[in-house]
Length: 319
Image 1 (cartoon, rainbow, N blue to C red):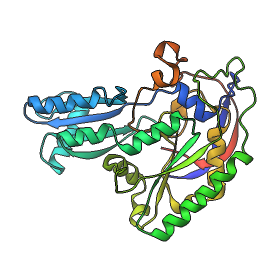
Image 2 (cartoon, rainbow, N blue to C red):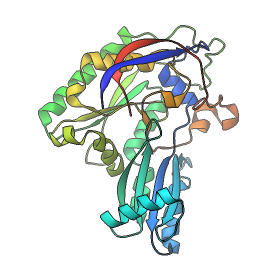
Image 3 (cartoon, rainbow, N blue to C red):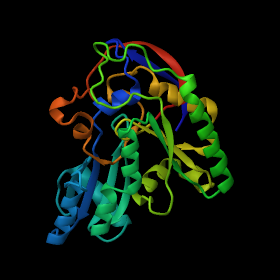
Image 4 (cartoon, one colour):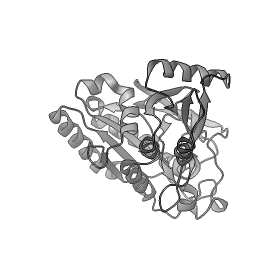
């Protein structure tokens, strides 16, 4: 992870929608890849557990952004996944084994061993109280939700969180929404308030614990976390994490620059040209935002756009 001057280009199509809102309305989240590694036939019970990963979740019948594949390491399909599976099977727990892969920028992936396949593991992977609350806040109009993973140093936890909360409290008076929202090319489609609102959501070891999510995020800053530092993750859009930051980096100027970037006119219509990675979140985004996919704006996650000259801000370079 590096912090430097990032060239943020403003699209020539005169889109004046803030990045956080554009991402919420028009960037479909990337699928996380769940691999079930096995070397013998999948049983009926195991098949039902696997099906729950892609099935409807909860009363609202949410779906998770996942692509589930079973990988038989005794076969030769496809070669790259078989190689991943064979290495994991050699190094880790008994089969069937579950691997979760998260897409990063520039075609890269990060992966983690979730554990041996069982019913509880499958349920924990696709949903948790912390991710449900994260989705609720984003859907309620929060511009950015800062996830916090406390470290073992209570003093650093307290000081870092207080520093972040002080900065976030002052931001609505320092930042302005772009002019021209609602004009042609900058229409809002969701019936949600457009606000400059920021919040902190702490992940603890109680009812809001999420083993999968904590393991994923800590893996980006393992050394800092092992030193006792808390970690902070600014999340926007449909659960897109901008970066994982150790507490010592969460200073006023960086908080302001990150917020200014996410609240400025959308820097680039192409999602892959923007920093960040998508978390696994169960949701009905199109229904909840627009009342159905037929009312949603065009998905601009991968469309090309011409860019204006860049504006330089100091923000994390992203994953």
